[in-house]
Amino acid sequence: MNSPELLMPAGSLQKLKFAYAFGADAAYVGVPLFSLRARENEFSFEKLKEATELARSMNKKLYVTANIFARNRKINSFESQIDDWATLKPDALIMSDPGLISMVKKRHPEIPIHLSVQANCMNWQAVKFWHEQVGVERVILSRELQVNEIKEIKDRVPTVELEAFVHGAICIAYSGRCLMSSYFSYRDANQGVCDNSCREKFHIYETSPLQDKEYYVEDLRNKGQFYQIDEDEHGTYIMNAKDLRLIDHLKEIADAGVCSFKVEGRTKSEYYVSMVARSYRQAIDDVMAGKNFDPKLIEELDKVANRGYHTGFMVNTPKEEGQNYDTSVPRFYTQKFGGFFIEQTGEIPAPAGYKTLEVRNKLKLGDKGEIITPDYRSIPFEITDIINQKMEKVESAHGGAGACFVRCDELNIPNMSLLSVHA
Ligand code: SF4
Image (tube, rainbow, N blue to C red; front, side):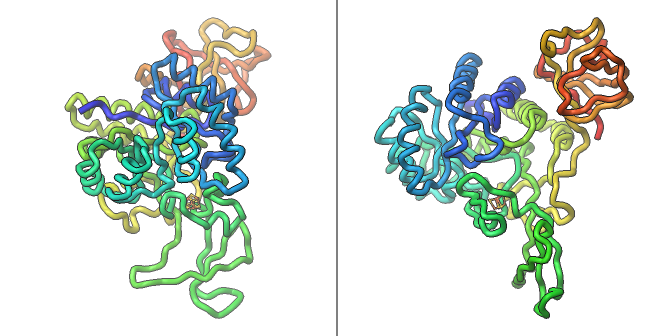
């Protein structure tokens, strides 16, 4: 078996560098107008070009996401942009709209197409259709499939490449085919502007304060707005799915025929991208080396922000353990992102015995944690001295204020190493 690909999200050029440095084989980026991350997405054509050059120089792959379901008004602008993208020779386009796919097939048949999870491909006949009739090289499977279903798909359509999500946030709807965000805040998830309505806080009333019907929820962002909810024989469904984590099931998923393990999270931090990439890199390498799963990797993934983890539909149909009823914000994590080490800030070199740190979250003297390097070392660390850019000793440093210098006796710390401190 060839080693499955580790495919990481990259919401920015900087995150792309971290993804590759910490073990990704491939990454996906998207242009704001045509991918499902319309916000917090810096990928102009120029940035895409830089990203492509970076990928080539590191012998990695780069996939460009253009997976919206387009309205008529986007057809012409899509047509004018695909010619530009083609000049970059992307390793693949990730797409879902049959109309846009047919345009690419006609104008640039040399560009491989990976069918986005948005297309909700859930059975072997659908995979066969997309692969054999339309000509997509790879299908990104719906997150609602179980591993035995994936195996049957691969058995019946052996020439298709299959990609599956193994980590990250999941929709409570069929992978984004959801109108909730449109309904609550007029932001259409299928145009890339989902407001994550399903993760917001709702208050449940057994009897509405306004009318005397039973079971209402109040959206706490819009107090005073009540929505009636129903209950069937299985209960009532209030939303906030836990995050997917399949790191300890990679062997069975690979055995079922999946060649690419995908991680969600283009809006997440460099810390998230790096920590998750590093953990899955080790897990994949261990599978290929015939080693048992290392349970320490579970602890590594507990360090980054998450909503609680579960195994989605891959192993079993999730029941109540797949939902997080307690909170609407990510809060389960054991460490926080202090920052990352850089060569220097502007023209100012670090004083002897100090390293330059780009600060991301507040740090103070006495904070303990570890330095995590791209070459897979974890070095215990305590902040004993901080110097700001005016060369003054200070007791704390804040994210957003740029870089500072921290005393660091460990000399061999490569740039891009992360500072992770106990939460
Ligand atoms: S609101 Fe939730 S379920 Fe709907 S598209 Fe957004 S993340 Fe997915």
